[in-house]
Each structure stands twice: as structure tokens, then as C-alpha cells.
Image (cartoon, rainbow, N blue to C red):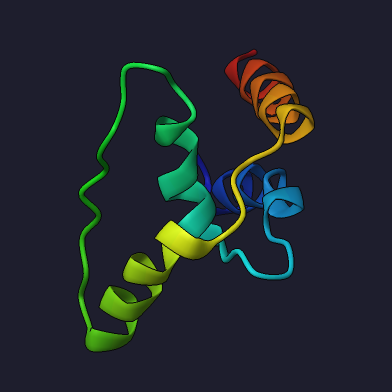
Amino acid sequence: TSKRARVAAARAFDFLTIDGRTPAQSCQKYPLSFAGVSTVIPGSKSVDHMRENAAAADSPDLTQDELRKIDEVRQSLAT
């Protein structure tokens, strides 16, 4: 996959970045939207990353509409 394709794929998820929730926090919220998942262990390369990861607990959950859009984007990228 080319760099351009990877960037385009990442930008397809820009709708998940909202006031009060960063892209990394959205990534943590996604697996937590599944009933069988209660914990996510993110990596942290810096103190700032660690703070952002810790703040994910207080960031807005993904909405049903956002979860539906994630599925749509994932399906479009799989083809």
C-alpha cells in the first residue's frame, strides 16, 4: 500500500476527532464499544501520550452514528 493510500485511509476517519476527543482517544474508545471489552492498554512513547491516553477515560464515547460510519469506512477500504 502506498503512503498516499495510507494517508487517505487515515483521513477517512477524521470524523472521529471532535471537541474533547483526540484521534488516539477515538482509537481507544472503538474497542471499548464492544460488550466483551472492558480494558484497552495503549502504548505511550512520551509523557504527553500517557496523559492523552489517561484522559481518554473522560472523553466522549463514540456515538451509534460514528460506529456505523466506522463500519462503512472499513468496508469501503476492504474493497
